[in-house]
Image (cartoon, rainbow over all chains, first blue to last red; front, side):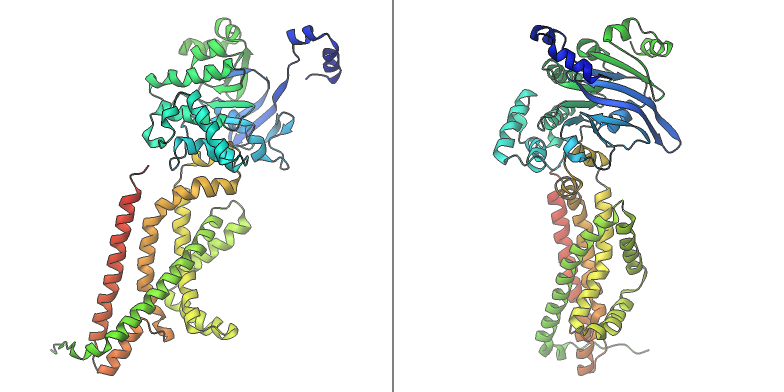
Length: 266
Length: 220
């Protein structure tokens, strides 16, 4: 935990020094989180922090609790113990305005979950217009701009059923970005895609990471993790087993379980 | 063995009476189905609520209505509640048909809502929409498309069920047929005629529903 005194000291150093080693600016703090599904103890005391600008990639065998952890972070799942703070705001506190908090956290799902009754553009503009009260015109301009950014400007009027999986997932990313979130969370965004469509989605994600977006990504794409992750976190059996830079985790894993997992997938 | 001899000749003069009865049956059905849809959507939404004090009373309403005969409900409504609040027969008829069909519509709405993939709700909530906005802009528009065909079926049932309010001496089709039969000293002609009228109404409606269903399905 960063002590306030330390923060004051840092702000008193000269400008160049402060820029060279900026204070880690914690945006997500997960503290000793426990989650049960009935008898199943899915998260067993998980703690970590995500700083602004981090690209954190969560890896681990299926059933290790990665997706559940992500879903807990924006309040889609309740937790039984511990707490999750987004910019200091507790997600699971009854008094927290969850919709307002969720506007700051973009989420992309494995199954895209686009709204099938709306066009690509309407999918993107719905939340800005309804939740943020953005004027329709402004939302549409933003939506078209985002569609262009994910390479789908010409698909604005298409319904999700008329788009390929990769295109749907790119629209889903644009939809999440339209709320101008501070953090983007990805729950196995390429797992439901045909192999030839994986790269078009990863390319959009890499672009985001390079643009400085704070990201938490659950993924089996080790190439992506190596290329853009600032930190890799390996989970197994509801616990964080190992955390480090991609180089540390992939090339010099310290834990036997990490080594065993990596040897199976690399 | 006695063979019944049909004689429709005496029915001609009653054509305007039959038409008026058909209008009354349609009026009863349309008004009840519109009100039942409103009741049903509210009750169906309440039924999916996670709060027991909302979901429970609605569950009781639905089960009691679906578990007792409509004829009994109409009589209890008119003879039991009617005198207390001075309910005219027409109002009692429409209210009991509404409450009856509303319970079935509620189950149709509940099934429609629950048939929408959970991922849709999660995606909407994760964007920062409230529960009400999620329901209104994401779930209900999708659910309504799936609800439409069974709702049309419910409307067809209601047209037929409305015959039961004949016990309240409302001049809908069955009551009218009975009256004309008495007047013409015939036992079947009136019933055969209104049977044909019912069939024309329900069959056209079911064709219309089929058409609407075909038209709305390929869009997604």
